[in-house]
Image 1 (cartoon, one colour):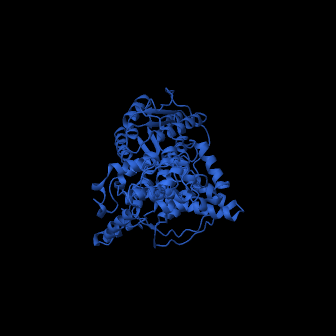
Image 2: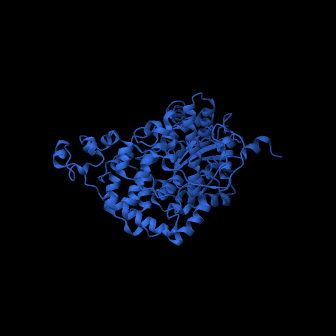
Image 3: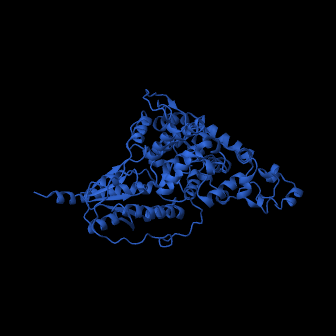
Length: 525
């Protein structure tokens, strides 16, 4: 008969970190704690580095998270290996060095390359008789048959106890732990972005400051790129890389709502709490239909923009040189910082899709590289939603001039990010092309030289887009397809009570319309 010690040692797990770079509320870590000789692993995969949506800023943020994570795990007796290579060869080499029997990880709703990677890993584990156990960490449900009841399932997951590490690990067989790779060592150029601070400690501090102080004016501040910079939660990069779990954010928010005597703060935080569910709602779309990363939700939209792509207008949009100050300021800000509030993201996509008639796939890849908080499920769902190719959502065509006047009435944001307009009088700042020559001389800004003419005519471009989009929506094929898309991806009334008022309520079956852009303010932010 085998001894108890041998029985424990025969179950040797490897915790595979992916987009869950934290210690707290980490189910695979908690599961590994019960076994001897555990080991933690992160793989820097060439498939990730070479994917068209990857940017050096993403890798830089992940490496900073890993630096902190390695120290936190070491303090608990668990070594973290960081290796570079494709997943299966790395796992095979590690298995040759340390005959592990279990692979523990979180589920991932990622882009096409990670989905293909997981299929290869599953096949390898089966061949090697290694038990690969995947744990949930969001509200996304694998192999979901119907959206009915999804909100209740999300609520149950988010209300479940946090997975905490109560104890230390038994040291594993000693293995070399080389220094973490660098961007240069991975063949990546410096990104030049001023990024948020990475790591679980920064994430928890950001959550605390939002729930206690910054969230007070959340509903009022989330639309303007000036006020949203401070007033939004700014948790999105931490949720995207997993340095903070969705469950942690949800439960901390509910506690804050229940404990604060400030009714205004509670009201603001209830708005934020509701958007946490929308975060997972959009991720579920990619889980249910992975092809939406590459093709239109509504196939009736196939060919709508694909054959009309204009490289010159695309380049001008990417560089923030469209001649529309609010569009250019938002793009330049995003490229410099890796972050932008949701309404301005929607405006950038709307302008690209309707004014410039660019297809969402190319513009989406560029934006994915800029967004530090790139979350594939949200990103591709929103790219299509704001481009009008879902077939079910209201067509939202933003006027860049009105957005400048509404969201930057004093011109502070535009002057900050488009310095060539810094001396333009405020009445002309949203429409600088209307300045006559004398005003241009005083403003030291010659339109067409120092700052470009508008790349398209606003009214003419909007009319052409409306004619095409609404014309398509009126066809019988479009109407029929919309019903199928809504049945598969549309949200349902949750039947849940408001945040902070946990009580049972009978779920309703009525289909719920997606929120307005302002109502989605913290999907990314």
